[in-house]
Image 1 (cartoon, one colour):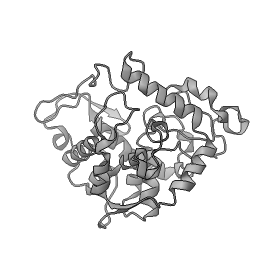
Image 2 (cartoon, rainbow, N blue to C red):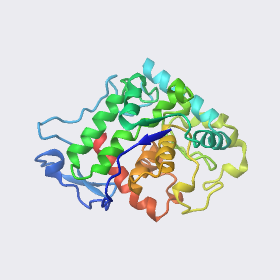
Image 3 (tube, rainbow, N blue to C red):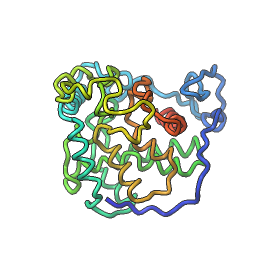
Image 4 (tube, one colour):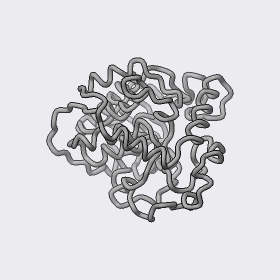
Length: 291
């Protein structure tokens, strides 16, 4: 796929050391705590007094994968299929096929509109069409960081790869498009959601893939790591191969925003290089604003 994007001037992507709390959430008086290298409030309250809810649309806490309801059964089955089926060989095959970028040529908005009919079965918190998520995310980022136009665009496009679910892009199953991502070619860290199902993955029986670093060298950089295949890696390939002018942190957000074992639990950090350590600061900002 080729996406047409108007070229922007180079931008300064030095991550802010301290979040401007007045700009971010209105007058905030809660105690500040350090989170992922940034000063943030204990509780996010907007300028109109709205506090972020503690429960999702299904009455459970966010990212609760153990709740008993029909939605959770769908979510768990997706991860079961993903963890059993996604191998290093599978990922290499998918990257080779979709790296051709021969499916379509369209504008960003045309691509957004395709997501009107897409629902992410891996999300325990949301069952709405993905275009709503894109617009809400971009608007949240725009309000909190009005001068970072590259970040607004990144928020809008970060999930566009979910078009892989549509017939014209291969109609891939949900387990090959959505869900938390993780490296292939090394041991499956226990922080991965529904880790138990990795026991049935063929790679779990290959000694070369079962050590902490596996086929990689410590500090090799995440760009050298094969991630589980899905919308994240596809959109990253689309942007990179089309020679996007978006900065390095934007590509990092696109490829790793579903890499929860890393940015929530600190797993696989030994594979990061210095550029990754800089870029992940912006990913923390991105996840903080939209959570």
